[in-house]
Every structure is written in C-alpha cells, then in structure tokens.
Length: 141
Image (cartoon, rainbow, N blue to C red; front, top):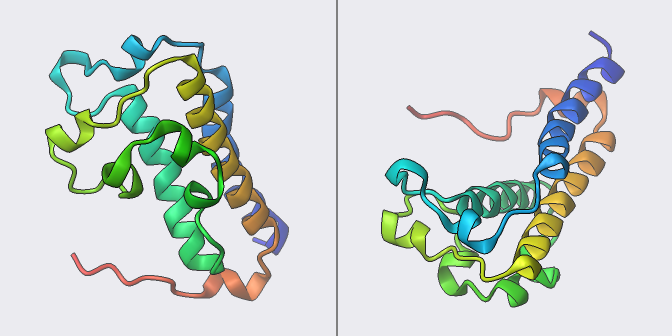
C-alpha cells in the first residue's frame, strides 16, 4: 500500500466523526445532558470527551497547544477542572459535571470537536511515509 492510500485511510478515519457531528441534529441542553438508561456518560460528555481525546493526543504528537486552551470553548463552557481533564477514569459524578446549558453551549462544543478533527486531518495530510512506521506508544496490557 503506497503512502497516499495509507494517508487516505487516516483521513477517512478523521472524516467519519466529522460527518456524524455535522449530521447530529440540534438537541436541547436537556437532551444533551441526559444519561440514557442510566449510562454514566451523557451525549454532552461523549462529545466533549471525543474532542478532548483528539486534542490531547494531537498536542502530544505536534507539540502545539491544545485547542481547548486556545479556543473560546473552554471559557464559554466553564466546566472547571473536570473540563480540563481527558475523561478517562471519570466517575459517574465527574461525568455528570459535563453539563451544557443552552444552544450556544452546544454550538461551542460542536465547533471545538470539529476544530480538533480538522487539526487531526491537517496533521495526517502532513505525514511522510516514514512517519507511519514510528512507534508512538507501546501497549502494556
């Protein structure tokens, strides 16, 4: 498989979540904050976590600042310390603190996740063939 094909696969992986994000209907804060069937993670938490996960890992790869801190989303959502975290290891109480209050919050969060996906795609487009063989983490499980 040549470079273009491998990069295209990575770009495709980055595009699918953005397609879903774009297709996500406007939801009320109440809908976004619900925990369906008692699940500890709301839709708001899942969107926030998706953005944070991409943002934190991409920042580690590129050495650039996280978009969370350089965008308006962090200030607009005012999630405090829990918002600055990544979400792994969140208790149900931690996850419940990720709350959206209105349509503007949803727009901020959606824009943040879209920006992280755009940054991921830009990073992938800039990869060289030899970058794809770099080991960036070892699994110790």
